[in-house]
Image 1 (cartoon, rainbow, N blue to C red):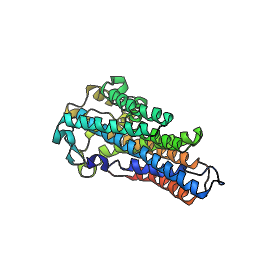
Image 2 (spheres, rainbow, N blue to C red):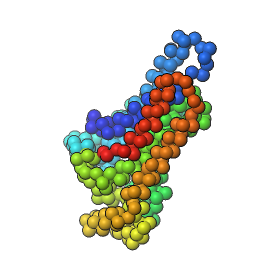
Image 3 (cartoon, rainbow, N blue to C red):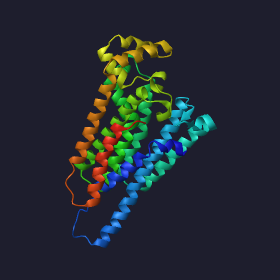
Image 4 (cartoon, rainbow, N blue to C red):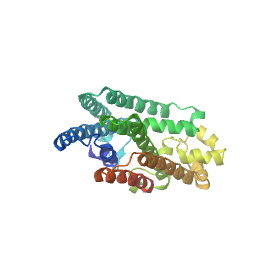
Length: 305
């Protein structure tokens, strides 16, 4: 199971950083002992959000591997390949059930409602990917919406939940949401690039995994804008290896890779703006955590696996 957490453990770290970045004492007159007690309780509840997020995320990976009939995950046999689809689905269901038991224990209606929509979004995103029309497959707007549902909804709403538990204002909660949303979209867009430019050794999967599964991503969508004739190949699909080769040729001749990196950088910049819009703090832990959140946006853009 650890292989399902290895790559995306940064979600957990990101949420803990967000918790520290937002946890500013509302009253300087409160006794130190009371502040420490409240801080420990709040930190425990926010850590619970991070744990819930990881459980939902790993459950989604287990279910995705079944849907995709995947044989490996990070160069290791996937659970469905090793133990079978039934056990893999049950393992994902178990993690989801534990996640929502933990969520209910927080006894915060707003947070429960917020995170309850995440699974709905995961299903919506997967359904969008499986049932796209020819026109939708070539739409960047549709692609980004699907990507939000499949990946960015979880981290963005978890960041917002962290803020809500801290008693932050609607404005600050929205900034936390914006950070998570844009950071995850940047991450996924770099994933799109790496699917074309990476190798199986660094990615833990076969290169061109998306296109070989018939999934049209940002580099191809940008290439279509330069070479409209590529759209006909996309409509035909990629079951024929010759179509894969033609699509790769067009992507190579286009600015698709560069424009995808630029779009990722744009989302990373929006994430930076969200953190920079937070009110200033003299608390050193808060400042360190915010710098770490800013640094994370650059790490996302620079990643090679």
